[in-house]
Image 1 (cartoon, rainbow, N blue to C red):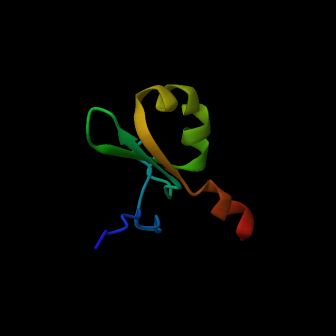
Image 2 (cartoon, rainbow, N blue to C red):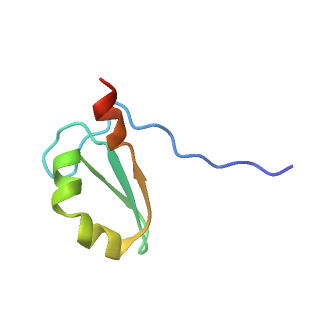
Length: 66
């Protein structure tokens, strides 16, 4: 049986590593580990994050659903 791996949804307990606001973006780094960002800092650093990420979990669409 193959197990489907899904990323857990980010919650209010997940905080931006830059400013401490609620995180809506999880960046899995190529070098290992992960970083969390609020929508503001994700947008501000998007170009660099794309360079260092192996994968990005983007839940910023949840902001417009409120």
